[in-house]
Length: 148
Image (cartoon, rainbow, N blue to C red):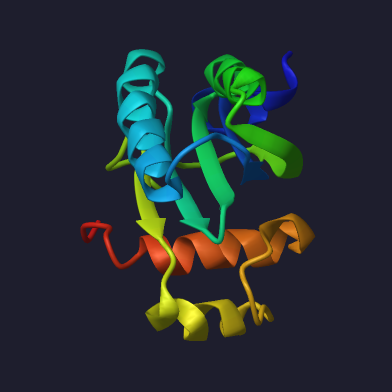
């Protein structure tokens, strides 16, 4: 039995952080990454949410275990990402971001209260424990999710 078969239909959840090292405007890079991710993720049934700010990324990937692993490997090879830190990697009972192949939010000044909720003064996702990273992504993502 595969490790991730204990989740519903072998679902896997992976949360990671990384730092943008690409050339050009960070906002343009985020738009390009999201557009490509939507296309790629749709093909392999991966969904998730990307939080971006201050040249940093915090991303939740979910889907079939093999597809999540391959998606993360592709991200790790992407020269726009550096300092990848896996924050959480576990079986998932259900999808939390089922509505999107890749939802996203760019952090701004209005998000300071959300950061404070998880004990951050500034966006520094690499230092988050799994539960705080999950809480932050879910709180930001719930602004966009449709009711179940």
